[in-house]
Image 1 (cartoon, each protein chain N blue to C red):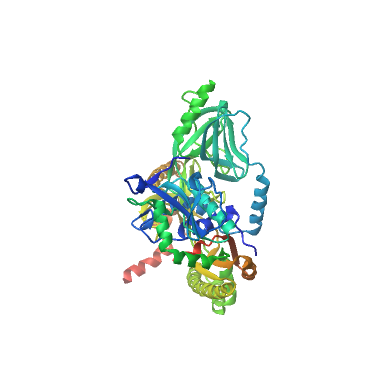
Image 2: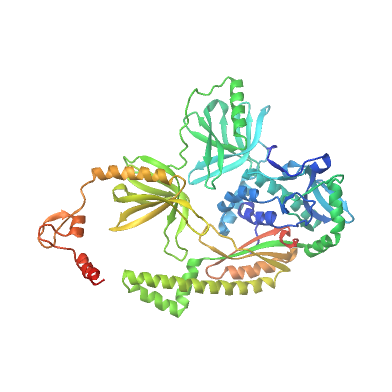
Length: 367
Length: 271
């Protein structure tokens, strides 16, 4: 076995060493707070999301593949500026890339020149995103929350043809201003009052015909697993459509939970501990019927109350349309009665009672 | 990105406002031009004391701190880049962890402070250099697949196997109780095995390395479980033997080994 230090696969290993190890000076001559060197909490937090993104399963052929990919892409390292092209602004930034099955924030140097803007990845000599300034129709800055719970500003670009690009840089305001200035300098204009739609990062492929999304949002879902590993909370997106409630597992890119609205009995929002670590979290429990038995699906996010309201409204509407509850015939006299009433109260005509209820009576009497 | 948040911890005259960012300590060697390869594109240079050399750059007396992941990543990679470069040239380094910054004091510059420290800790630094001379650090992480292990345990342990077979013929309610019991037995057995594997693997690896540190096993994102997380100090030319031992472990059913490095000896220069 040969050791690897392929940067994509070993960043976590490097960080573990660089941030937590190395020579420590036990002296008051270094910058520290209360004796604790200042590396740390913040840097760790900034890098935390990245660590979880990097997987440990070092599959040998994957490693091989990414290595050959790297050599192939590391061809030209010069920034592809045209002759005489003037750089207005160069900042480190990232672009939300989503094509095919691969989506990610990809980062590099963002160059704003007099006539175009592009994000260049120096190590791979590759432009990750490029647009002529004349094609920008509208700009907007929005605050988005990532799964790590951190808010950050995202610059939305509406491009000619209606596509939306998202960029993240440290100073979003400055970038926006400079783009507008440069465009004005060229006599290019943004469309007045043009509103950019929400970015739909997932092509929603699971909708049926006539199915429309009513609500959607990031939600953690308790995924049941019968194996030794047990149940685990996983991140994804909850969708309420006019037909069903379903949860999309982003990592596997498929629907892991779904229930038609008419099978949903109730939803309850409450605050409880999810594990020893995750305490006092907002949880939405959805009670639904599946194969004749009641099941509970649990979700967690900040907006559980809103979801509860939306869901209960949706199932109330559903209930009024689908009022016809299942009917059943009395096993003794054959009279037709609502299934629930028959099982609970017995038959009103002949006095038949469900055997389940009969058993219970003597028990109660004995006590 | 020239601007970033810096935590100002000291205020006062110019002496206390200037700091020195430390990358590593090495032994005197040919003059190096490290130009602007430092953290935040700073110029990297060396400060010597006797035969020791500290690799540094000038900076304000404040820690590098930012919430911007890409920026932090860039800094960390730059730190590593410098250490790596010096390591390649001189063969031996004692690396500092990221963000180790020496500050000045009233009437003492950061540089004087650094030299004073090199003088006081000279013996300790020489020892550290001796320990890692000609050696590299390798990361070894051993994972197993709990599903495969659980299946193996069911097959291997007669008592569990019996329970497992009985469960199949039970009605749903009883089967549930069986399953719970089975789960707890399997879990106990797994812990026992992980413990045994750990001891056995430890011995096998230990015989191939100069020194090793056991780090905390980490959580993984996939369905593998990390049962061992090691840093190994190995004489540079002798990593092959370790690789061979790891091949042996990796070929066991349900076991998977990650072998990374060579890294500068970050884990073997601390206290």
